[in-house]
Length: 223
Image (cartoon, rainbow, N blue to C red; front, side, top):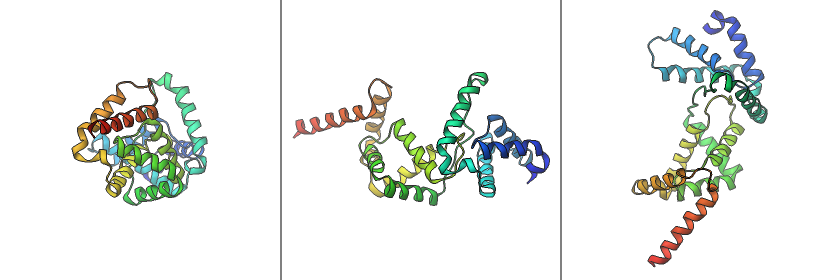
């Protein structure tokens, strides 16, 4: 590997961080992108960012980083957020080191695992998408825990957003969620605006109950 040959000290520090902590710093990620830029000049910024994520997953397949593994998710998460709290104020925040893009097979595997091993959560998630077209940050956090329980991932990247979007898109293809139908785009947007306009004032589950109660009352009135 060219990176290993040309930057041996950085390479060893990178391997140590992935193996022992399960995440890398923004500086280390910038080093990987700079190396990719030297190899493939002229790409857009997004290309180097995606390339760095792919490079790291390729390294995991070679070295099987211990702290990336599902059984170490809790330790990795605690270590990463302790690091963010420590260095974030000094560096004006710690940014995500990229987004993980999942394959079709990985999406189908995750969907199957959720259906079989987390049926209560899966039912709740499908209910939210059917009734509202979106979920709250609490559901997203739990979804992230499920992703990390299936796949080896580092903690400094966004491994949730694309997985959730693709899994729920596949679920919509299978079940046809009411609020994801094109004719309900405006209603879904208005619901999202309603929820987003009062963050923290009403728990999401309570807000959902209120919306469902309003709908039931409207149906009774019309009938």
